[in-house]
Length: 315
Image (cartoon, rainbow, N blue to C red; front, side, top):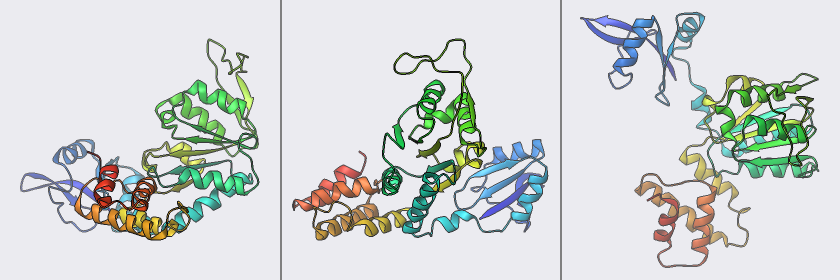
């Protein structure tokens, strides 16, 4: 839920007062320094009570909108209660829309180890598209120059950029993405530098080219931290899940995952993971950790729970 507070002086003390109700915010909700800065700048403070995040807003139409939104339900409350199957079904549908050329780009965010990449590549393959011929998959660090060359060499394909989060730290790379993600009929991409770029075969790369392909960007960065211009040009799919949703997803996929492992072993693995999550902080709850736990349980060790703990709880 979004709540809006304004700096106010009560008996000489600087506090944050709820715009909608007039209530004073507890000291633990908003730091004094933020209230002080907001007062100096003539700003209000928007608080997301679900995440605890606090933002200072300039006095403008945004401030008026913030006041209007005070008390409304946050969409985050809906997301945290969604069925994981619905999340991934929607991801599959959005991927198909990119595969069919209905939408030129898709940005997928969410925690690691939940099968985002697998779903996307499997969906494209099931559509009859072939890797290397119709779509390409790149994973890891990318510079602006590297991104330009990659898009040039695959200018008519679906380009999957997986965990290439360094792109968002480079203004030049972000601008290239904006040009590539636009929904215009003609997407012309430019990279002008003092030294001509060269491809893997040492051939010169032109400074301009027309990109007719599509881009699927997969990132573990929170969606709220991604470039707004990039998101506005794309379909977005957020696969962020809380612990309850992650366990639910494991139950949904149990029959399909690790088919060589008996169902009873996978059920025991999930039970151990739930016990460990209740006992310890920082347990890694994702599909990768579930696979580790299932493989350990399949071998019938007497101390399976301890062995799983060692694998999925960071020391």
